[in-house]
Structure formats: structure tokens, C-alpha cells
Image (cartoon, rainbow, N blue to C red; front, side):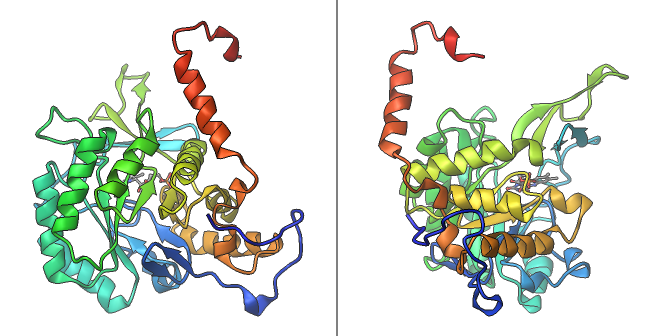
Length: 351
Ligand SMILES: Cc1cc2nc3c(=O)[nH]c(=O)nc-3n(C[C@H](O)[C@H](O)[C@H](O)COP(=O)(O)O)c2cc1C
């Protein structure tokens, strides 16, 4: 675990302007800065480039691409929620061939670090998408969106089952260039996210991206029907940030060396710092982009200031810093203890 700097308070000294090292290694993926866009919130970065130079952030994570073009779910597919939003876009996209020809070619020509997000309804489809990307080349990593339903298995979400998640990752690994790092995008809608993270790492993922949206639902009280045509949708935005921080923390505690890309409700450099201290090696910005398209650049600048003001001279020093002096053995023992007493009366713990 990283975190060698000695910081003795909130402002232990401000690092010299010229000396800040913002680079990060997310496993073998080297980034100039730790801020990325989150998949599905900035397409392939073309529109964002009108607001800031997209090559100045760590990289672009593209919208999840599938084998064939898809029109997505019926509308309405967005609903506002307190401190967040619900979406049921349904992986709308042009299909991998068009993506390679248009979006990937543009990103390559633009010189942006590119993490291609892929999705599929079966392990086989994920493999086919990965194989087409291997032939095309011209990107830096793959994020495997296993948080979508497995059409061959009663619609169960891959990321909610350790075996199904591992099977997808193995298939993508087999069909990808060995030099290309693979990140498994995990769902927070599971009992034990560490089990899923360990399973995908074992299957060949070089890191994990946490978290995808939480499954939610809104009822329109005027029509007295579900607000989304797809009934349920993915909850994102500031409302989910503490869940994301908890997931990052748990994975970092159990798997100290597993690279983590953190995301979920990051609106400011301060929010990003929280994820970094919990264990994220990079941070993706999603929903914030919808009301502030320059959010990734702004958050990057704010994060640098947050780190400097705490005396860090290197980004890497802050990764997992909140874990120092924490006895993780005790945490694991405590949760085992809860499990061992599951049949007892635990009323006293609810407040
Ligand atoms: C409109 C919308 C579309 C999304 N599409 C994708 C997607 O295609 N693939 C994916 O892995 N995640 C997708 N996500 C999830 C985000 O990448 C991110 O994990 C999640 O929204 C939490 O981060 P945030 O609160 O900063 O948005 C989408 C989120 C939103 C709001």
C-alpha cells in the first residue's frame, strides 16, 4: 500500500509550484494525471473537447460499446432524484465497427489517452468485441462493463455473480493483446464487492473500476406510474458517493495491490481526494459533466490544489493514505463476528 509522505495536519506545507508530480500508474496503465471521464457520460470525448483540451486530463473512458448497433431503451430514460439522477439509457450505441472507424480513429488522431469500455449480453459477445478491438489497436486499456445483464442467464447481471464475472474477464483477456490492461467495472449492488473484485482479478483483470450505478426507481406521482419507461434505472451522482468510497475502501483493504479506478458522484477536487485517500489510483467523473462539461478539467485542477495544500508533492503519495494506522485484521474479524451472530437479535445496532 502506498502513502509514505508525512503529513502532520491539514496544511502541513504547500509544495512548490513546479514540483508537483501528478502522474499515476494504474497497474501498467500510465497516466499523466489521475482524472478520467466516466463511461457513458461524455460519449467519446468529442463534445467535451469544445470545453477543454481533452488531452490535458488523464484520459477518456468511452461509452460502453457492444458488437452491434443498439437504439437503447424507450423514453423517458432519465429522471431526477435527490442529489443524483436515474438513467435507463440501455447501452445505446453504433456498434463496435462504427466506433472503431469514427470515435476511436478520432481519439487516436486527437492524441487522447483512451480507455475503451465494452459491454455484451454474453461472455461470447464480450470476446467478439475485444477481438475486433485487438485488430484495430490504437487505445490504452479496456474497461469491461460487466454491470449489464447476461441475456443467457435470466437477465442476471454478470457483476453480481463472481463466476459469471470471471468468465467474461477470462474471455476478454483471451481475445485481447496481453499488453493491454483490462479493468472490470463492478456493481455496488452486491453483498460482498471484495469477493467479486478478487474473482475478476484471479480471472485476469489488471484492475477494477468502482462503482457503476446503483439500481433505483422513481414513481411519477402525477401519472402514478414508473417515471422511466424501463421502470428501473441506474442511480448516479453525489447521492452514491459514500457507497463508492466504501467500496473502494473495502477492495483496497482486502487487495492492497489491485489497481482501482474510483467513481461515483465526484463533483469537486475535494470529492476526488476522498476517493484517492480511500485507495483509488485514478478517478472518473461522470454525472457532473451533464451540468458542467468542463468538470473533469476543473476537478483535476482542484484536486492538485487539495493535494498541495496538504503537503503532498506527488499524487501517488496520497493513494490509500487514509488506510495508514488502520487495523484491517480487526475489520475483517469484526465482519466475521457479525456473520457468526447473524441469527441473534441485532436490534440494538439500528438507531
Ligand atoms: C447517463 C449515464 C450513462 C452511463 N453509461 C454507462 C456505460 O455505458 N457504461 C458504463 O460502464 N457505465 C455507464 N454509466 C455509469 C458511469 O460511468 C458511472 O460509473 C456512474 O454514473 C457513477 O459515477 P457518477 O456518479 O460520477 O456519474 C453511465 C452513467 C450515466 C449517468
